[in-house]
Image (cartoon, rainbow, N blue to C red; front, side, top):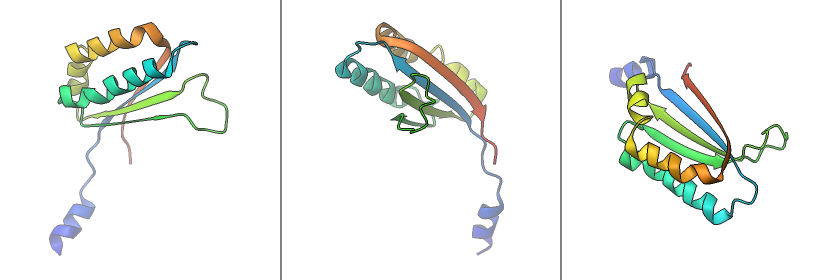
Amino acid sequence: MLQGTAQKNAAPQKLLRHVVMFSFKEGSSPEEIKVVKEAFAALPKKIPQIKSFEWGTNNSPENLAQGFTHCFFLSFASEKDRADYLPHPDHKAFGILLKPILDKVLVFDYWTEK
């Protein structure tokens, strides 16, 4: 019973969140966008510094997305892990794949706070 109590009182581990939002060029096909989504989703299997990954498409009724349609959410345990991820050859290859259909990108990183 004490173990459960100790676990509840333990401070949660902070994570470095890396939020990436894309808008795609007008005329980008659903197939081209699917290739980009699948390539981004494959990165956690190739880059061990990525602790978690999820993605989704905008469905907000507020009309404030400014053209961004896709959000990708990655977590890292440290700034070093993020620093290793950014120049990683598989991340760079993803950028080359993405570039022809990318209109805008927004990146926002933050440490989790509770």
